[in-house]
Amino acid sequence: MNLTYKKAKIEDIDILTETRIQVLRAANQLSNEVDLSEVRKQSYHYYQKALCDGTHVAYLIFDEHRFAGAGGVSFFQVMPTYHNPSGKKAYIMNMYTSPEYRRKGIAYKTLDLLVVEAKRKGITSISLEATTLGRPLYEKYGFINMNNEMELPK
Image (cartoon, rainbow, N blue to C red):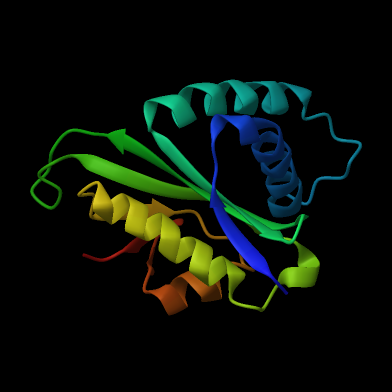
C-alpha cells in the first residue's frame, strides 16, 4: 500500500459527493435502488459553499490512484456556554474506508487529521454520530458516549 492523505479542494467535489452517497448507503443499509438524487444534489451544493468558506474540511485517501477512504469535519457556531465559552463546535462526519482497506489504521489517521484541524481552529467541542462499526475506533481515540452522540472530552 502506498497511501496518500489529501486535503480536499473544490476540484474534488465530485468524489466528495459520491463518497457521501456511499457513506449514507452503508450507514443506513440502503440498496442502490433507493433514490438519493436529492441528497446528492444538496451534498454537492453543501461542498460548493463549505469548502470555499472554510466551514468544512475533508480528507481523501488514495492508494496510488485507487480511492481508499475519506472523512470530513464541519465547523459551526452555537451560543457560548459555561463549558464552551467560544460556542465554536466541530462535527466529524462522512468517515468511510473502502472494505478492502479496513483494519489498517486509515480511519484512525483520518480521524486524527480532522481533530487536529478542529483544534487548530481553537475548537474543543468535537462530536460525531457513531455507527456500530465505527464506535470502537472512536472510543479508542478517546470519544465518550453521550446518548446518541459521542464527544471527545477536552
